[in-house]
Amino acid sequence: MKVKQAIEILQKYNLEEDIFFDVYSKADLDYLGDDIKAKITDEMMTTIYETMDNWATTDDFNDAVRIVLSENGIEE
Image 1 (cartoon, rainbow, N blue to C red):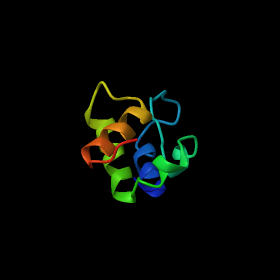
Image 2: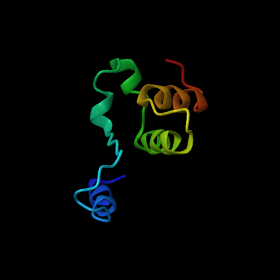
Image 3: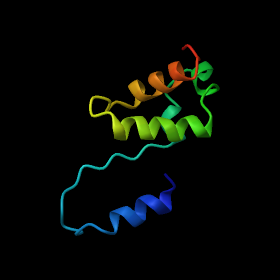
Image 4: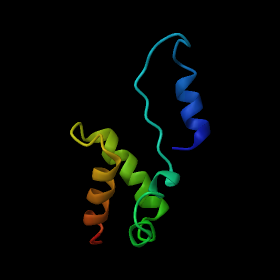
């Protein structure tokens, strides 16, 4: 998701309403090892976001990264 898309989504909410909204970007990979970061493409990042959205049990960014890497035949 691009930043402008996130802003468009958030504009639909009442400014006083509490919401649960996590925003992740490639910057969130910084705490992962360089060897892992190097393997993750922009396309994989999109898949990581989709994985987090579609899997109710996967609300952890690290889990989504691991799942997408393993689906692409890449081991950590």
